[in-house]
Image (tube, rainbow, N blue to C red; front, top):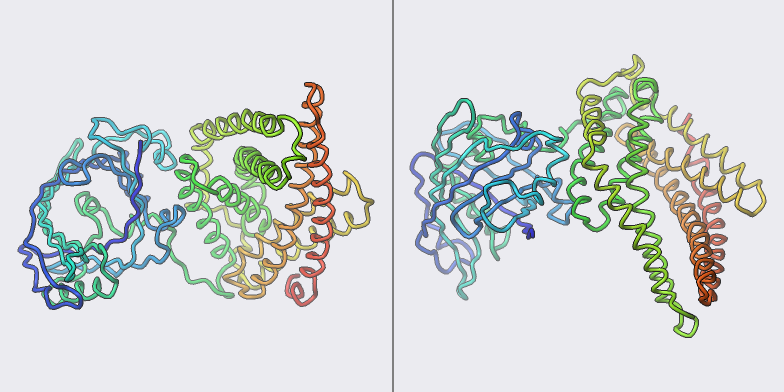
Length: 534
């Protein structure tokens, strides 16, 4: 059983002999405790090529102190997906005699497994498979810390800030080993304000501490460049004059990173994680399809098909989840006298089997060699992109042409659907139009760094169309499902009245969604929103 801790911390370090400056005169501080010593021993696990560390992930087994046990730490940008702090900044690191590592507002997700077992708990190991991809985990370093904990309290005795002064001894593990030793200071807030946290940091700076050469104990122990262990895509300054290839690759890089961040959340069945990973997969496919002048279609055809496969696996689980929630809400909104027979039990049984099967299929897919190969191919695309010669053209000149092509495709399908009579064929065409609208929307989003507000406004308009037509598809699916369950109830000798009621409601929602989708398209296709596309 794992437990979760979301925390914000501020780490600081010191030179060979760290003496803390006076803190009792800081605003709101009434007492400063005597340093309380404790000894912590942590064994860090990773693959031979340090895939976890390079992804900004830490997996360790700690002994001693209140946090004894196994810990998995995800980087700040991944923790945002799980609801942790959103603002992440970090001070630059410099070589100096003393050290100070400052990361205000760093969000971190700490997943812990009880006990100090010898082997990596399966529940944590499976959460890093998106990085290990079948690679074995082994100890790579042992870090022993002699810690002195000093607590700043207010007049009521409430802990405001804890200052942790560490004497660190590290040893790498493997065919060749090395040893190192240093001192550092960490500052962690309890109930104190960010203002107090800054005041403590400024006091430490005034005492002679300065930015650390490395931001984490493990990176320092393994002599790994801290810039390579952020686990987040490198920041780029993009503009209308940037090469089109740079703009699209930056977008793809962000989506690939998000898939990796979402993977553990999907495995733990976190709220909305499957939906978000499915959307991210669609964004990747849309970018690969919409910009062949940047990444030629033949070079990405296989990758596109593999992303389609992943999207379908995720989509099956997500669609069943949405449909189950829809029927539950519909029945809750139906007067008791209109719910005739064992309706809830039949609905629950209908979805339980399908949801369990879809979840099992999704879990198998995320542990499959095919999924790991897809991740490898995505990494390879970003490391050595097969760019077309036209990818060097300015983004503001090249990308609007691709967006225009995607937009015109959506327009043709919408026109064709609007000319059709009401019925299943029109529903099918509107579903096809929705896919085209979605591709155009994601293409516009990808081009935003080069096109700016024009791309954002078009994407917003297309999103409204996509949402309305998505409601239509949900209603059509719900109508068919209500009829299916109703027939099964009738054949079992039950009263199918309620399912007839639900079928008619879904038909009404489908008609409303059609009208909303056509109205949204009229807004999104206004000349002032699209005149810049070519």
